Length: 210
Image (tube, rainbow, N blue to C red):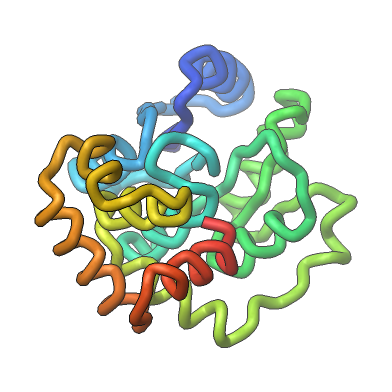
């Protein structure tokens, strides 16, 4: 029996993917999550998952942060990215940061099932057009990813708003916390990323496409 966790913020896509997978895998157990917080909670409650199907753009995930965080917390868990994007640089970064597959949402259900079977067998699967363009991730980017993985989801949210150019009081309003708490999060972000200014923190986020 296989157990998959589908982490995607679109209920209709989760439902469609469940139907498609049920037609191709016998005795399949499926769990769902709609954002990064619920994904981490589901994995904390039940880490006996054979495969995480992770959307890059669901709330809290911020493109690569979700993948980086999951790989840090659950290094033995196979992760496949399910995405509406097929950008070659994003595919390469996802594989470089530990995903075993990158599956476009546009694929027919039979090809999605084939890709998942390949991943469950321990092999990497990416779209055919990307297989010759998987440039390696630099040691510097790997080190930056390690530092980013130490951020809590709330600290990542603060970093996201820093990247958006929001002031501390605006971040406090968005997250319904005090300015003092925002300042504490920023201090922790600087320490974990090894930077000394908001500009440097934003540059880290841009470099990793967070």
